[in-house]
View (cartoon, rainbow, N blue to C red):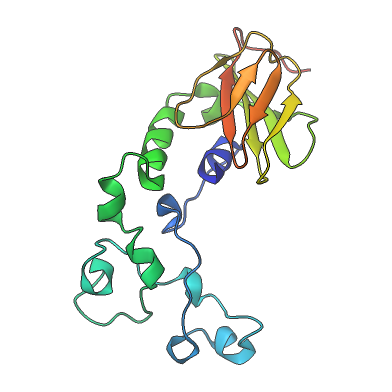
Amino acid sequence: MLIALLTALRGTAFLYQGEELGLPQAEVPFERLQDPEGRTFWPAHKGRDGSRTPMAWEGNEPHGGFSGAEPWLPVDPSHLGLAVDRQTADSGSVLAFTRRHLAWRRQQPALIRGDIRFLDVPGPMVAFERRSAEQSLLCAFNLGDAPLAARLDGAGGAKLVHWGLDGELLGDIAHLPGHGALFAELDYPRTSA
């Protein structure tokens, strides 16, 4: 859901190393920290090293296949199960979703160069419309754990256009499970209000 939200917002999307794998922040033991800030303020602030550990390419290889030599920072053992080789073999993985989603996004004019208009919906839902001359997309994301439903003004007649996301649109009501999302295309491009 977060990859879809990030790449649906207006502007240039940046994915940092490991986000396409859904990697959590790495736990780096104090004795392996390199960041002076982390060493100084441990344990209240662990510094930046947890987001700079080597990428796990192969789950069964030493150092996650990143290097044959001991890397500057250790590979977090929790990252080995999410290594690239394991996710490449799993069509339901975060990496597989990211690849499919980015390929789909490249074909959506509204997401490439469209305007954005945020909709008034209850939190923790975020919803907006992306509009270009060629296309209008409604985008809705549930940032919470619990399912929720909300009316999306103007969504009547819209059709879901994305696979791999588990939201539903019934009339103009978006139904999103916890951390769910949807993209729906309107029948016609809308003009700016």
